[in-house]
Image (cartoon, rainbow, N blue to C red; front, side, top):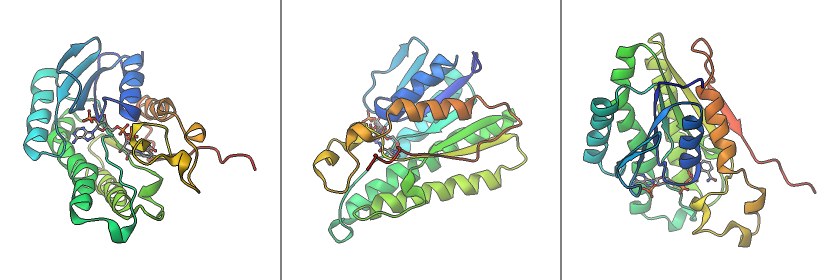
Length: 234
Ligand SMILES: NC(=O)c1ccc[n+]([C@@H]2O[C@H](COP(=O)([O-])OP(=O)(O)OC[C@H]3O[C@@H](n4cnc5c(N)ncnc54)[C@H](OP(=O)(O)O)[C@@H]3O)[C@@H](O)[C@H]2O)c1
């Protein structure tokens, strides 16, 4: 059990990639603090569930403070929670852009501010950002999401540079399309040019990548892991 006795934090762990990731880290021995708006608070086996609306600054401050005071300093933080809007650029309104930036950039920024000082003091720890193919490539009808994911990749790069030499490690995992509820409002199976859900990655594929990154020995850092669905056979 490579993560035995450690605390991991996973944001957005009530479903999809975050839920699978929390389960994979727990299977590797970690106690896992799961943050979301919908999981009932409390201890459930290896999980410590915390209600936290990551769109609210005060909630993030309260949540990260509680993690440190009740469960200690995390060895692994997975910044996973995210929102996805699929809309033509000219139809995207300022409120939708703000939502994307609040969840996909501001929330990880503030979660990191809440947790990294204690991890720096401990002299060890791993901070994993769940980016996306859209953290380095642009697609049509994706401007707000892509801007936010390029933004969080920038945050990852800046933190890795600023904390260099502290013992902390920073990893970016950039998955391609993954069959989770994030796609439910958009029905990709009915959209020409979109990968069918059956061909997408599964949440467990991404969780396994997180487990791999989180179980490397302290002298090895996975800086960037790109994971994509295999293109369909023609
Ligand atoms: N699925 C894909 O194709 C794909 C591909 C590349 C990257 N990603 C990235 O992977 C991450 C997870 O995506 P997913 O597909 O697993 O999404 P998902 O199934 O929609 O799950 C999103 C998670 O984020 C949480 N969340 C959303 N808003 C929140 C808020 N205001 N406060 C707290 N938690 C909130 C949700 O919990 P509650 O609703 O319970 O709060 C849920 O647990 C995201 O960063 C996404 O951009 C996904």
